[in-house]
Amino acid sequence: MLKTLLIAGTDTDAGKTVVTTVIAAYWQKHFPQRSLGIMKPIQSGVGDREWYDNVFNLGLSLAEITPLYFQAPLAPPIAAAKENRTVDLAVVWQALLSLQKQRDFLLVESLGGLGSPVTDELTVADLAAEWRLPTILVVPVRLGAIAHAVANVALARQARVNLQGIVLNCTQPRTETEIADLTPPELITSFTHIPVLGCLPYLENRTDLEKLAQLASNLDWETLFFQNE
Image 1 (cartoon, rainbow, N blue to C red):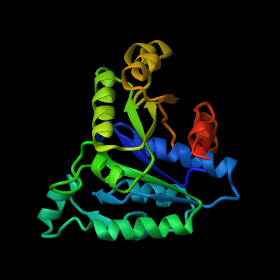
Image 2 (cartoon, rainbow, N blue to C red):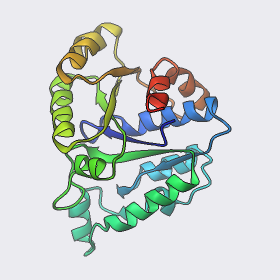
Image 3 (cartoon, rainbow, N blue to C red):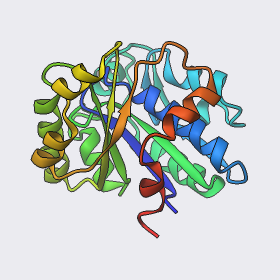
């Protein structure tokens, strides 16, 4: 069974937190006997770590969820410079290893998109490859999504990221026709050669974990979780 999964996106507002929340809700419903961890390795500004702490009973401190935190909602190297600090990836790496040992399954939400800078030299894609993290790519359903998907998958291949699949996510209400027109799964798979695991509808209430788990059941998580066995 998959032990760790990185949730990356095509950009900063693709819906990584929504997808991470949905997967976590699904996991807790269908694998209650297996422990779950959620990690936002680096966070700039208030947001995701506080969300996971409030919604899920993880038994983790904010520092365990996010070992490296900056106040300014900017790219880490820029936020770090404003605080006269550095982006210490050794701290993040040790925290990741610790949670991997503690939990049966660990969800890791990346910052920004695969091309977002983590340091002055490394992007999210570089880190995903270097740390050998199986990754899914969240693609928002909107105009230009196909091009963004193709570009991010190309970057993932260049960096040698272990990209497992693509999840389409509606960041606003969309009809089935709009989804088919803006993000046709067959066309995206044809261009990227990466399977589309499904599409999440727009979610107004992200705190109803039972509903989220039901929505996730329509996606191909079983293949994702067990394909490496």
